[in-house]
Length: 296
Image (cartoon, rainbow, N blue to C red; front, side, top):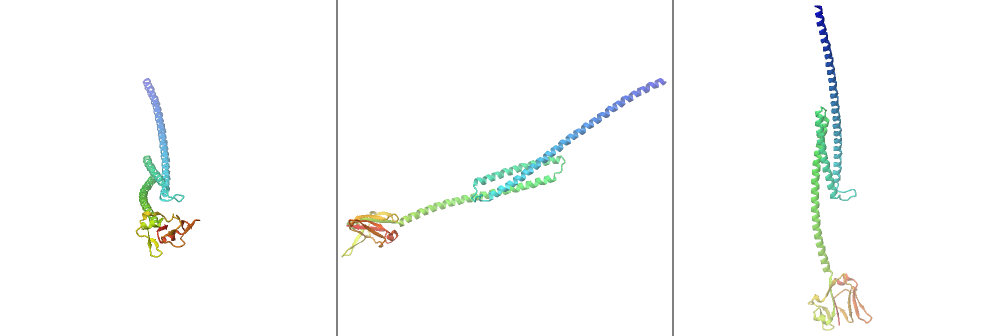
C-alpha cells in the first residue's frame, strides 16, 4: 500500500513541476507583450507629438505670411490712391496696373494660406488639441481677407471710373484742340485779310483808261482814286512784309492818301523817283489799303 502511494506522490510532483514551468513561461510572455505594447504606444505618441509640432510650425508660418501679405497689400493700396509719384509727376498707368496685379496675387496667396490653416486646425482637432484661439485667428484673418477683397474691388471700380474720366477728358481736349486749331486758322486768315494791301505803279493814261484813277477839276486837274477800277490789276501783298515799292520814274505821283511822315520818296542822282519807302506801316495804311503811284 505504501508503495502505491509513493508512486502517486511522484506523479503529482512531476505534474506540479511541469505546471510551474508552464506558469513561468506564460508569465514571461505576458511581460514581454506588455513591454512591446508600451514601446509601440511610446513610438506612436512620439509620432503624434512630432506631427503636432510640424502642424503648429506650419500654422505659425502661414499666419506670419498672411499678416505680411496684408501689410504689403495696404502699402500698394496707398501707392495706388496717391495720384503722384515721389517726383510729383502722375504715376504711369503701367505702375498702377502692376500694383493691382500684385494685390490680386497676394490675396490669392492669402486664400491658399487660410485654406491650409483650416486643414491644420482639423488635424489638430482630431488629435484632441485645444485650438479655440487658432480658430478665432482663422476667422479673424478670413474676415480681414474678405474686407481687403471688397476694398480692392472698390478700388478697382474707382480706377476704372478714373480711367473713363481721363478718356472723356482726352476726348474733350482733342475736340478743343481741333476747335482751337480751327480758330487759330480763322484768326490767321482774318489777320491776313486785315493786313492785305494792294499797290500799283502805272502810267497815268493807262490808269485813267482802266478807271483806276480819275482827273477832277478844270484848272490844275488832280488825280483821284477811281471807283470802278478792278483790283485784278493791283499787286496783292501783306502790309507787314511790304517796306519798299520800286518806281524808277521821273514824274511820279502818289495818288492815294497816306499821312505825311509815314513814307518817303527816294530820289536818284538823275532826279528819278527810285522807290517809295514805308517808314511807319501802321500809319501809312490806316487811311487806305490801296497804294497807287502814277507816272507820266
